[in-house]
Length: 257
Ligand code: APR
Image (cartoon, rainbow, N blue to C red; front, side):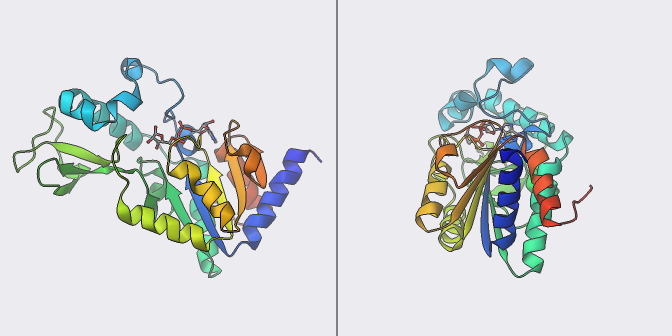
């Protein structure tokens, strides 16, 4: 038996035994749906723009048309792709744990809404969501579906501009999402990091915080990260492959969309 296989079995046992799990996900979980991660090269027209430079208040203030068009492209793309087996596996595991009166808190840095479409509920969206927009003047929120994207930037009804409810570089994270994250990390006995490079704070430190609270730790990632050396079990590979294998190992019926 290869060490990868025994590590997978070990991870499955840890997940099966855990009473309270926190899963933290990043862009890697959506990669197999066809959404590029932040650190992989983009294709097409927008590839010449650096997401780290567009996703800022400074960029929006300087060129709201450009930033709004970029987000229009991003959400159109997110809407046109489907959740992948990794999303469905997390949704199924959460339901399985809930039926057994156990907890699984899902914290994501993704803004694409694919976890919810893959069956997960009560998702802590640490970096906000692309599906809700707000007025720069009043903060009044509106669902994306109510906005018409025929002019760029989009004027709000109150004389401001509409922007996505996403946490841009340099902005504070939503207080309630942070509070829920720290509460869940204080209570969890297993922390699983999936598809995140572990380079953007505060999520990058979550694994360490959970470890200090006595939780066991697992990482599932295509590439090694700064956290790979400190977790109890590191599984290297695609989350859309590894997560369904773990579910099969535990004996949880794998959901087909
Ligand atoms: N399965 C698992 N992991 C994958 C897969 C896959 N199919 N494809 C890519 N990965 C891994 C990459 O190896 C990388 O380590 O996912 C990670 C994605 O890293 P980032 O692009 O840095 O995404 P993330 O960690 O979510 O970034 C955090 O940074 O740019 C900001 O706000 C943005 O929320 C984002 C935050």
